[in-house]
Image 1 (tube, rainbow, N blue to C red):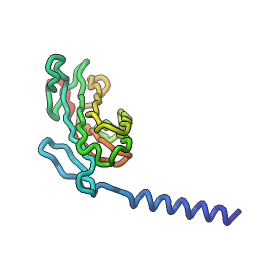
Image 2 (cartoon, rainbow, N blue to C red):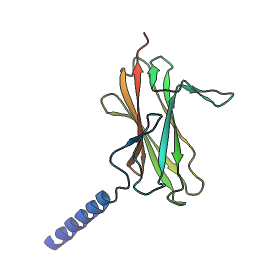
Image 3 (cartoon, helix red, strand yellow):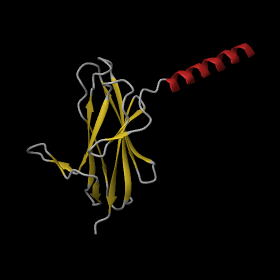
Image 4 (cartoon, rainbow, N blue to C red):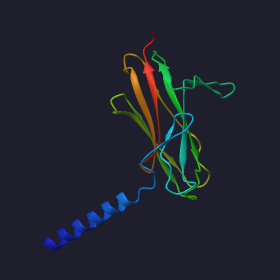
Length: 164
C-alpha cells in the first residue's frame, strides 16, 4: 500500500514539473500601439491576439463604432470585443481552445466564454461583450483577457464610468 502511494506521489510531482516547465509565453508583456498587452510566444511566429473594444457594429458596413477604452454606463450600453488571432495556424492543424475572460475593477471574473476552434482553417476573430447598466456594474477599470490553452496571450484594460 505504501509503495502505491509513493508511486502516485512521484507521478504527481512529475506531472506538475511537466506542466510548469511547458510555459510557452514570455512572462513580461509587450504593449502594442492599440494598448493591447501581448504575452509573446517564446517561439517566433507563435499564436498572438489583438483586442479591439467598441460599442457597436454598423449593420450596413460592418464597421466598428465607438472604438476605444472609455465607455459610459447606460441601460442598453455594452462593451464589445473583437479579438483577432494572428498566426492562428502556428500549431499546424491542431484544434485551438480559447477563453475570453472579463474582469471587474476588483479583478473578479464576471463572465468567461470558452471558444473551441476545430482543426483546419485559421480561427475566425473571437467576439464577446458585457452589458454595463448602472444598476449592475460599478464604475472603474475593467480588464479583458484572452487565453490559449489556459495560457494568457493578451489583455486590455478599459474604463467604465457613469453618465455625467
